[in-house]
Length: 135
Image (cartoon, rainbow, N blue to C red):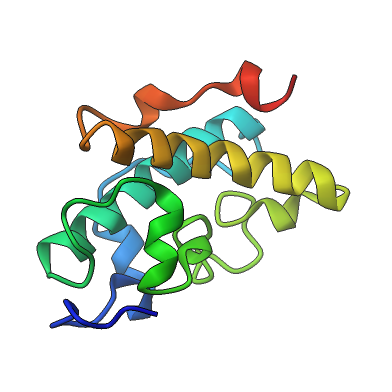
């Protein structure tokens, strides 16, 4: 991993407050549909990436989501381990087959990658393409 630019701690190392202070409405885990959680996870991932860029943990010119893997485990931007057992924290909690779980995580990663590739224009949620992810 590239540690050259890192001058601070990664947001992922913080506790549950890292999510709660975002003021992003958390979908109700009892009524949320997978699409609601994809949108939520994209918004949270975007916020965390932006915070890590602001703190100089990540560079500001990331070309895609995969490049974050040069600095930390980029897949951790897709889940929230502090929301243990919650369907909004991770698609692992939906009780699905592995491929379906991966498809949903990939939808989040692809939206974040497209947003980064655009130079972080607009909201990463604008780049969600549910139909392409599951066709």
